[in-house]
Figure (cartoon, rainbow, N blue to C red):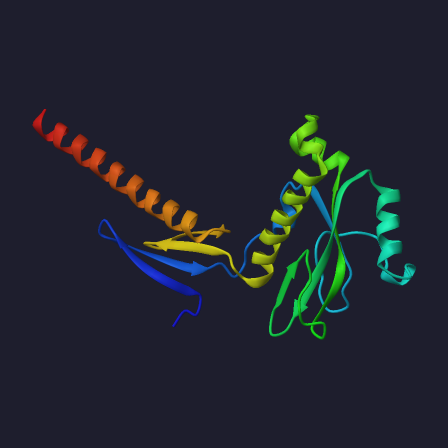
Length: 194
């Protein structure tokens, strides 16, 4: 039995299988307004960088260096919980034993301008912090394996970070197939009649 299968949906004469996507593209490969600078002995997390944890005497020094190296418009800490799986957030976890500070997520002026333009509303710190929290939530889904895909008649598509979007796209694919089949049938009938 496929342990990634979540559900099977019957739709317009087809079976749609919704499953966990075990090999999704990391959202850190997408165009982001943020950089995730993380340090961990066991995991490679966030974005690639050249910083070495041994060069710092604490998180304050890391933050200071990031602010020196970039025009930081917003910054939030990153925390990791590691117990039978990993999860990340910007607020910390109640269990101090299996969790801790692993880095920072920052919005730089350069990245924000590249992704959003020069409009001042996109450079406001509070708005940017909301975007950073959103980036971390999506990355957390990636870390937790909370990414979806579908299979219909052997045709598969994955990389969905919202199960409802995955189901909607699978149904839309079935609708397209039915539309094409109906057009082909209409053309065939028209050819016979002519």
